[in-house]
Image 1 (cartoon, rainbow, N blue to C red):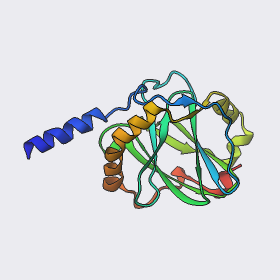
Image 2: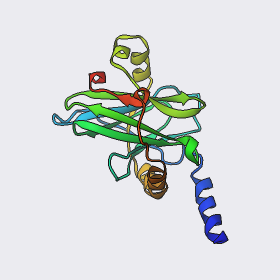
Image 3: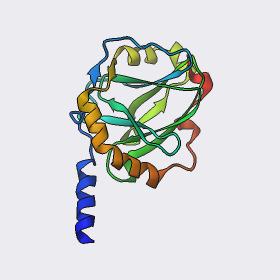
Image 4: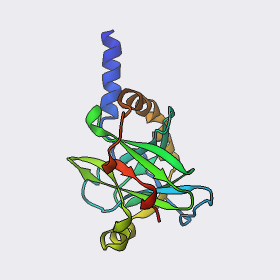
Amino acid sequence: MKLLQAAALAVLLATASTSAQAGKMAKSKEPLTLEPDKAAIVFLRPGKFVGAAVAVPVYDVTGDDTRFIGILDAGSKVAYQVPAGEHVFMTTIFGGEAGVRFYKANVEAGKIYYFRAHIIEGIWGLEPVRQEAFAGKDFPNWDKGTQLTVNSPKSLAWGEANLESARQRHRDLEPQSISEANTLQVEDGR
C-alpha cells in the first residue's frame, strides 16, 4: 500500500506544475476558419513575460469524456470547434484541487467565442470574454498579442501522457455548478 501511495505521489509531483516546455504547440500555418455548423472557442493567452514558465493545459470535459485540447503558452491562442450547445472545459495548473478550474460555454453555430487566460486569484485560469469587450481597446491588443497555434507531435505526446491524470481530476472534482463568472453565454459570440 505504501508503495502504491509513493507511486501516486510521484505522478502527482511530476504533473504538479506544467512547464512551458512540456508540450510546445506549433504555430498555425492557416488562419482560423469556422465550419458552418460549428462554433469556435478560442482560448487566448496574451503577453510574453508574466508567468511565461507556466503553461496552461486545456481540456474538454463535456459529459463523461476528457479530451485534451491544447496548451496555452504566453502569447498563444488555440481554436477549438464544437457543435452548438453547452460545453464544459477544465484547466489543470498545479497538483491538487486548487489548480483545477472548470468553465462552461453555451454557444451558437457560426460564431466565435473567447476565453482569456490570465492569473486569477493567484493561479492561472480562464475568463470569458464578453461581447462588450470586442468594442473596447483591450480585446484588439489581447488578440494582436497572440499567435494561433495547433497541436504538435510534442504537445500531443504530452497530452496523451497526462490524460489519465486529467481524467482522474475531472472525475474527482467534477463541478456541481459553474458560476456565471466562468460561463460564456450565446450572446458573447461574434
